[in-house]
Length: 575
Image 1 (cartoon, helix red, strand yellow):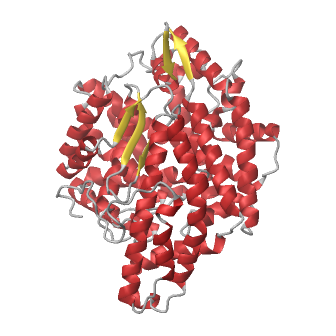
Image 2 (cartoon, rainbow, N blue to C red):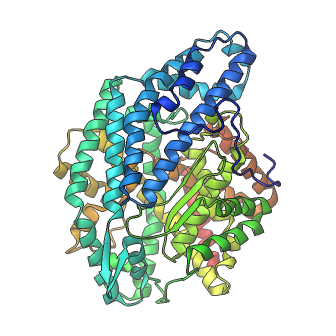
Image 3 (cartoon, helix red, strand yellow):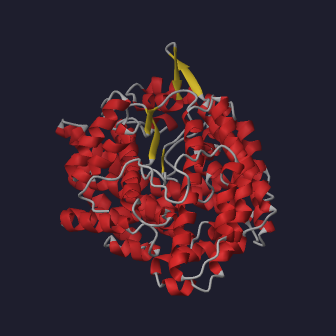
């Protein structure tokens, strides 16, 4: 796609499927899977046409599943939505898995495969071969059961709230009060949030016990030693290993944790406290009132469209399309699942953005982040196969995290006051650094969990505390609220819903900092490289996509030191 034109929006692109096909059951699509599996292929041209037809089918099914998930997360209290999603994962998806595996085998055994002579397909074939290797019939019901349990996490977390001043607040709304300059109020709100989270702790621990057991069994069934090794195969991690993750952990601990500790000491000194408490970590250290960049979800979206347009008109058109198509649900409310996401919809070509906005700076970061994902979806829409569009997370998060940084100078659309704009930039750049140790903590914790699948809850708690301490600054006094940090991992939905999808944020954060460094020196060329890299989708290796963006796929100690030093210098210039 030409990134100066209008991005595509919903049109019926079907050539193979019936245009009026509705997917309500396995019977609605089984004939298409049977035809794909049994079709005779007599040339490389017919093979590529077969690939495109299969991609069209997979895209339609993926989008059907996507809308079921989207509706369910937008309203976890709606039984119809929950049942529709459960029906898909328990009745439709398990029937797709075995025939899809047979179709993969048909592709890999085709005598015409070598004649396609397309490097892009070779990238896709790596993943297909790996999926065939790890496929086991016995895992189909286990995977369905896991998805239902992952759904339960959203229901539990989405139902949490607190009462304050006669109003019921979601935890996202309540967290804004932790920025109040009234320390007594902050403590009160922290206690209420902690009590709310405590109300589901026993259920979450039990749920996670079940998930670990099921995930380990899937790994054993597929002849892996543990679920970590299985997931590295399932996620198609061809370009790095578990040892590289461990290198990342050490690089962050050595180079980033000391910078975060410096931030903490500055906070403590500016606030004038003898010690920092958990409710002191979000308030402005200068004693200023919280930034209030917008009032409503409508205002958030409109301002984001203006901001993206100012960077490049194409970016603004992408966001305007989502608004026009009503592919957004932005504001926090009770019964809505936690977190935020951009859900790619391959058939439509336009994704869906979900988040829990409550009027904070963090919400601005989130909409820009998810907007980066959305732009990525639009840029890859014209790639011929769904496999080409299905980018690995290390690339997907590069798109979103880079957008956060290259948009910084345009945040004046939210903050017309120069002092507030500077303050917003400082807050965000500090978060860019502060999130890296947290990413290392979450990733290292998951490695331990699945390397030790028979651990007890007590062992799990102690290991979390040990890892948390390893990367923390030691400046926050949790006395009386030890349970808050002992169970802090409960609020990280990735651990429950998308295991091992987290280290990607760290790799991509480093990449985003490197692109921003280049962008400050040469914005025009860097922007073009960024767009060109995103257009590749997953038609090149991760290192080569990063190279197209003008950076390295690198997480060595030296590289982390260089980039963290750059951010520190940028913060110094803002003082």
